[in-house]
Figure (cartoon, rainbow, N blue to C red):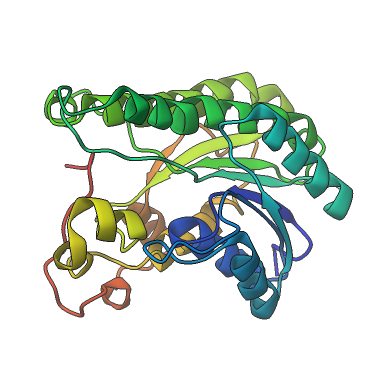
Length: 273
């Protein structure tokens, strides 16, 4: 029960990968801080911070639901303060919240560009900044960024340059912090899926049900995070992890149960060859 009483601060944990990680760690009795925007359910997305908190408690964890839009620094600092007041500190930060728009340059509205950079880049940076003082006091402290390996092949820029640079910026924050925080033995790593993951973003923005059927469930990312966050923070930092490879290193090679549709051909995610 490695995660019992460990405090894990997760942005965007009301649904998808963030919630899957929350529930996985909750099963071992972790304290989960659900820092996200949704307090009223959007039928297209599903879930709120309160429904996610209820699921965390049912899974065996302790939950704190905090409304937090990471575009606003005062909401970040308030959420971090509430987490520390409730649980006494922060051991793990999962930078999961992200915005996506797979549009070419002419089709990318300035408000979409700003949204992706406000959340993926500025928001990620500020959440990390405000968690660092508490991670310094944490037990085997980790930061985990849901961002891709930096692949400079032009094909990853050509179709959606605004989104690509926002996610690569997120990865560069991870890499920078891995070096900056080594002296404090705070791990900073990134995790990305080999295949598309069945989330609301895939359903509503990318490929609808057809792509969902060629995807894996968020559980594969949760299981990979489960193993990464147990590693010794002093030795395991600055890595761009891929979910399949993390599980393979743990001796888990049969991944069939993660497929939404058993036996379906899977669709590779962005930024993976």
